[in-house]
Image (cartoon, rainbow over all chains, first blue to last red; front, side, top):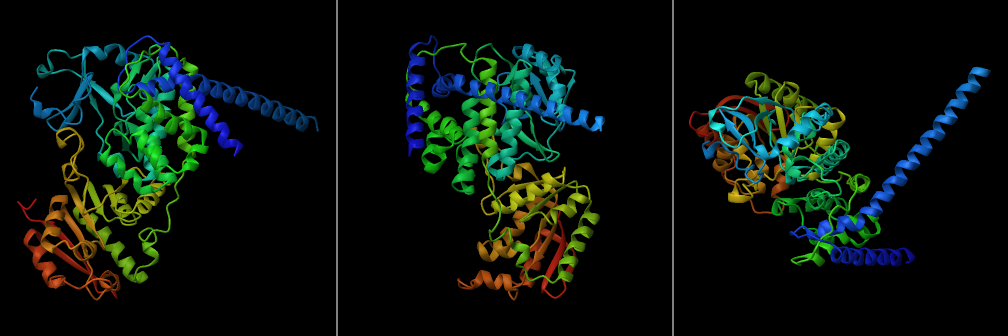
Length: 78
Length: 462
């Protein structure tokens, strides 16, 4: 239930966001306007999610590398 | 250039069109495409995509006198053995085509390029894998510009895949009606409510559809230069994750379990396999159409003999299983496709010629019609002479199985209907088909009452 309400809030925000962006813009429009405007509206969100994902992958790769390196050192030591 | 040389499917692209001369396929590039084409070739992206099997290779050829005027270059792309369309693909074929499109876009973005067109018709199957055939759809990016093909990707790939996965796999056939992809408002209204709980589908289909509706026909002003490269990579990543999460499991249909419910003895089945092997050895076809190919058991015999084999079936589950096997075993010359033989793919698009009919893509050198005729003749009331004409249009040589009325599978077809098929006898079959084909050989399948016929189309009977 909470989840559904959360999505509705998010959706309303996005649609309103599309509207604001359109008003602030300068240019002309074609039939793909809705897609164009929507993409601009979600660009920050998907870009941020991607950056977090890439950053997280780098962190986990670093941790894996560090651990596997230590294991290797241990094996050499014994 | 004579207009008849230009392929009817390529007139929309102002950058260059595809034409055929002397049986060879070429593409003429106009001067306007020069900066994009040069970047594609010089940046290493072309070589990278070709090496990864994502882009059809081409070679540059000298322009002849006919190409005078606005011509930058003429290229000769490698020809695809059989052009297929998204409404003929199984779920995984469409999904793989979608993921190939996104992979190309990802690699293109890293080279400062982008796909201006992400339509499913730009993808074809080459050596068993999806490949981009529209080299000119890769263009230099303009800093800050959104991905112009975003809406098209959602209509051509994400919406049909979501509908097939979450509602009904048969909804993929909406692509046959909506050639520019399934309108997102339609997809949104057809998808179950639970699809809204997936953030990716909520964004790329439901909210995207609402945004399209909101700005439909409205004269508004748009911001430019607002989408950075990281955001574009994020968009592609989000679409990729949405596409990968969609699943459809093929099983349990009448046809997918067909080989578990036949009346063949192991000996008869082996006899049928041997007959198919002998047929392809005799005919030596370069192309085979296996009509009603089920999961491709007999298609693979033709493919193993070196023929490029298109394995058609009406059942989405069979086509899916067939494709998954081909993909797993890295088979390069089997192409499973969805096709209702009683309503084969029509000519579609502008002037009914942008997308070819089934027969325009033939004929094949050889046709397999195994355990098929009784479904056409009795299951669908197709008279024998019309069936014979159909097979004659489909290919030069024919291996066809006659299943008599005494067979349990035919009896099953007649359980709930009146037997109005007095003409469906072996004698009448031989007489009717004998008018169009020369019957070369008869191979009875022991213990089944069924007979395989090796036939060859008579001259002038196409």
